[in-house]
Image (tube, rainbow, N blue to C red; front, side, top):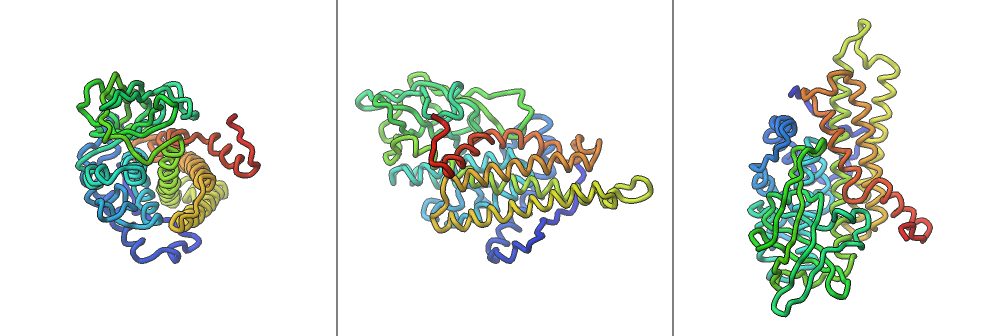
Amino acid sequence: MKTSTYTQPDYYNIDDLLSEEHKLIRQSVQAFMNKEVKPIIEDYAQRSAFPEHLVKPFGALGIYGPTTPVEYGGGGLDYISYGIMMQEVERVDSGMRSMASVQGSLVMFPIFKYGSEEQKNAYLPKLASGELLGCFGLTEPDHGSNPAGMTTTLKDMGDHYLLNGAKMWITNSPKADIAVVWAKDEEGRIKGVIVERGMEGFTTPEIHNKWSLRASITGELVFDNVKIPKKNVLPKADGLSGPLKCLDSARYGIAWGALGAAMECYDIAKNYAMERIQFGKPIASFQLTQKKLAEMLTEITKAQLLVWRLGMLKNEGKASTGQVSMAKRNNVDMALKVAREARQILGGMGITGEYPIMRHMMNLESVVTYEGTHDIHLLITGHDITGINAFK
């Protein structure tokens, strides 16, 4: 794949708002992604293969659960640091960011927030290091945007629970060692349980023939009378708010990650436009190309300011679900548009694997849908504005 010297867009000097630690984290993750992932990711995506060998190196770099306290194996970092990490990972590939988001925000976060001390000590350090790979089971074949309608059940059998049902579109599931799964108990309350690979009746069939997130491994979770020890139930999770809080954390990371994909597409398009000669001069000299580049940079700059402010609110414990939804929706939509414009600037070369533009476009078609669709996030904001729930 043809590579260019990446220069991060920073039209409003947003780096001035970052600490030296933030910049060092960005430099470290960027260097790792450029060296270990960028040279191989196109091949893995073309083959629809998951680069499983990267799971532990991601852990060694501290990409999983960086905001988790140090005593549980995390980095003890702030939310700006987490966002910057996701930005740099997704700058190279959305599938790799998905793997990291699921591990940190959807597996480690619920165990840390809702788990017992025994569960935290047993799972979090191994998840942080990449020794264990996790997945998150909420979405079902018939219940995507309406998780409250889930039909997966958890039945109390005295000394254990029985788990029955199925989950769909689960990142990491075919390779996961554990799954944080959400199910309804006999009273209809939603509970979280930790399901371990090897439990009888637990299978994780892979989903094939994806056009998007091809370097990410996706599958189902199927539960056929799976015996769940009572010590595997998350004791502090009760109701739908549990999984939704996890999604808030992951959506925050997506808002930063999609920005990274947009930055990469813009940088490639700008460099290509400066070098590509047509009608005797670089296509960057034409008004329509300059219009595209100027509009792309404007939207990227707005998105940078949006996630920086959201990160500060997260650090202060003030970020609302609606604010997270606004950032996720805006930044993924922006990234899709930037990728499409970049593809046009590259012309026919934009569809080849020599550049990552088309891969980013295809990946972002999944990102705009998962963890809350484009329209669902709009309605979350609408609910905030009006106080009226449009879902009912």
